[in-house]
Length: 176
Image (cartoon, rainbow, N blue to C red; front, side, top):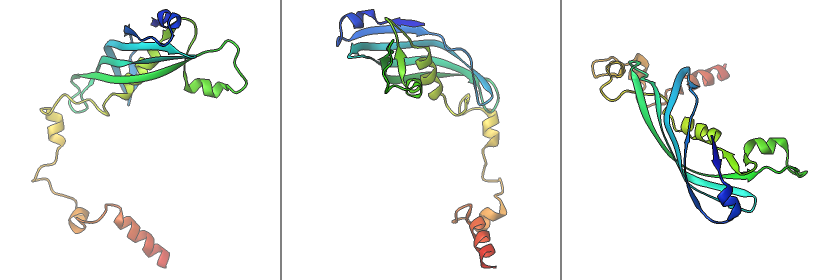
């Protein structure tokens, strides 16, 4: 969806508040489909020079499955942002390269597309894995307890780095 920035273009340097609802399509993250509900960007925007400054907060709800028991999990997302969009010139200058344009947020005209920004902010704020809480029976079963035996190598070298045995093998091989 597009954000109308025509007020800022007519009054450079002045801040304007905005609330922008958006939709993020389902995303495949680590082999799991994650959906997003109630995506809202709110904050202020202003225009100065040839740049549009947008700052505010993205709020949304991510829906996934618990990594332990596979029950549905909702994860609240709230992330602040401060972005600069460059005005796309109809007559690009020689110093501008196509690779440079891919890395910058661009806009043209009096409307700005915020869907890519919302998607990026939401996905970067996701946890590595969804969990349904501390009371998840599957995650509790995976936690070691005092009765679980440790491996023999852990008993022999409790204070050494786990890869120190590999280092010893390497130095023995070099001596021969």
